[in-house]
Amino acid sequence: MREDAMYEDYYGFTEKPFSLTPDPKYLFKSASHANAFELLQYAVRRREGFVVITGDIGTGKTTLCRAILEQLDRKTFTALVLNPFLSEEDLLRLILQDFGVVSREEIRRGHLAKVSKQELIETLNEFLLSLQPLGAGALLIIDEAQNLPLQVLEQIRILSNLETDKEKLLQIVLVGQPNLRGLLRSLELRQLDQRVSIKYELMPLTQEESGAYVMHRLAIAGGGAVVSFAPNALARIHKYTGGIPRLINLICDRALLAAYSARTNRVLPAHVDHAAECLDLEAPRKGVSSWVRQRFASFASGVAVAAMLGLGGASLGQSGAAAEASGRNADTRTATALPVAAVAAAPASHPTIAPVPPRIAPSQPEGTVPNKVETAVATKGEGAYNVLVASFRMASEADSLAAQLRGLGYRTSVTRAEVPSRGLWHQVLAGPFTDLGAARQGEARLRQLPGYADAHLIQH
Image (cartoon, rainbow, N blue to C red; front, side, top):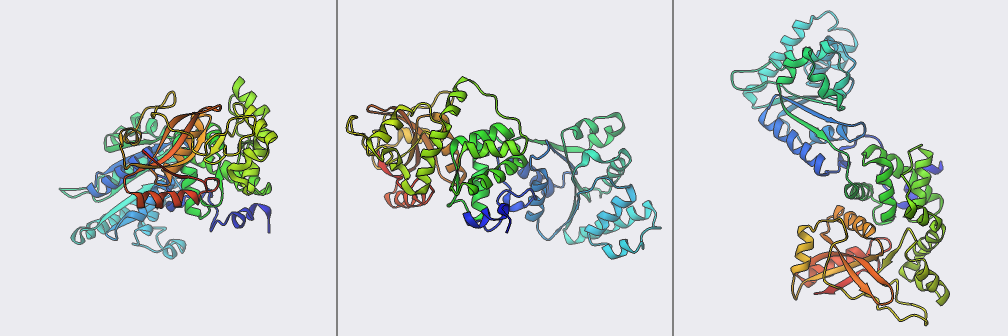
């Protein structure tokens, strides 16, 4: 068996988690994708006529289209055109084939070769009119529409004229790259552009959404509880990819292969960098602070790998010397995650640090805006519970983990706590829970996540 096919078995995936095929079950509804999904559903229900969805290469347009098709009821007949390099007659034949008016075999044998364009349009119109007494409708989606020849786009405009006195007979969705909008604004196509009722542009994922996207795909593929991406690895993935889902899939697939080769269940920044190099993705810009962190990457990787092999949080306190080294380098390591019990075994020369750092009044990391959940945490009184998942030196890493947990359905917040002799740490909390039973269930679920087996309840 090839090595690149073996990491799926090693991590327990039921299928490849970062495949490039547009599988609708993997659709991740970021803010932008959720808006597009809802707009398309609305347009189909309301029979709005023309809709145009644009987005950069790899932003998930085709996956979105397939997800919409899966949501439609049996009263909506659909045609999906993936190849835009068609003549006007070929387009009409393909639409009739997808609607079930003619068969693939009839087209293959050339039975429709001598049928004129006008006859094809009349046949399509008769089919669409036959749906009216049934209360049914028809939807045509054309992908990569920016490549359609002008005469074919004009033909599509003519199809939009198929209507009754009350409504359009054919709902048409054009999906393409951003230059499709400019094409539609050209003088030759101004009549078509005027018929477009909804225009929407898909945006790349934010850094928070990118982390949640990775967690989402891992969970769908069945390996979310076995392998995980370090928060700073997710941050680097976003820098390399700019939040483009297709690029995220490529780099995550290679990073998983690198982690599998190292026989580790934690994907680290070094694995992501290796994947980016293999894919010729441009490296993130490096400042002085990132250069310093890189100098200590080998040390950080050693600590993280020890945790993955079962030492967990205690890896920072194996011995007095190891813990002291850990303390000296805490501010310069890339992966400064502090699982809840990680500081329980401090050396004798240092004051013992309690397993749960004392909480201070919640405050936000610089540059962030409090959300509703965090406000709720700050105002909850006695009887409110949270699960302390982990602590980090860097606010960005805490925010990244919080985003991953939100992708799994948890409400999360990040607070700051001053730990004696260790300084300021950023705590990732799941909750709040007002019921102790629900809090215990949340605690049990979080403990199943790799690297967070010592997550536990705290009460306000």
